[in-house]
Image (cartoon, rainbow, N blue to C red; front, top):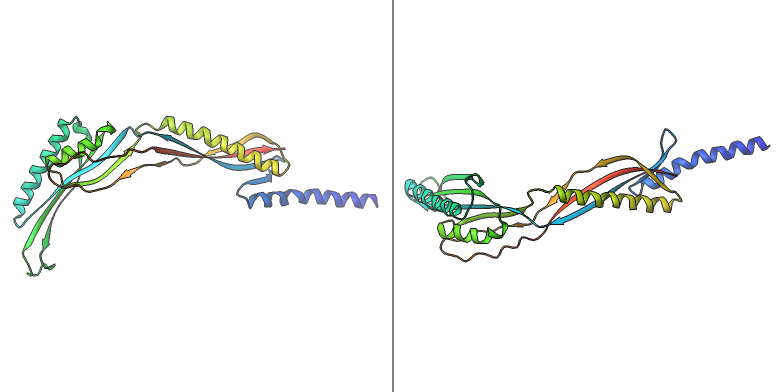
Length: 242
């Protein structure tokens, strides 16, 4: 009789492990029996670090229209050349100015190319400008508009070297993972041990963007808010538990 009772108790102990693993899995983390007999908990920690932008990109351009395509093209070329000249005088290096768009298309009055209205030719040309002094962005836009720009496609702030922020975010993610593991282990009556496996997730950057269109003619520098940028990291860690 004693032998039968012992066998039943052993069976109950063996069944306890998969029940524990199934309950933890439903909460997004895993507490399971490894093939080697080592129980573990797998969690994902998240960290976010914030910093000020140190570089910006600005999209500037011109658009002209005329019933004579040559006149429209010449005006666009002249105005964009003046814009580029103003950018260089403001200290923007030649390597930081790149043409990113150019087009010529017909626009028909009346909406039909079959003879209902005289065609107008529209010429558009724009450049991407890398600005290494972010405090200069508003003034630079104003100077470009004064020189003839009538398109501002975008203003985008970024951080040139994000290594330091990534390191800070990574440290926070690891601490977050440890805290999650200890909370789960405490609820299960377990103790967290050493990390068995570490996987770094994708880094995600959140950037502040400003979009708008300018108008031709003299203008004051528009108010440009740089805001703060963030770098996010995720770390998935498997801990041994006792």
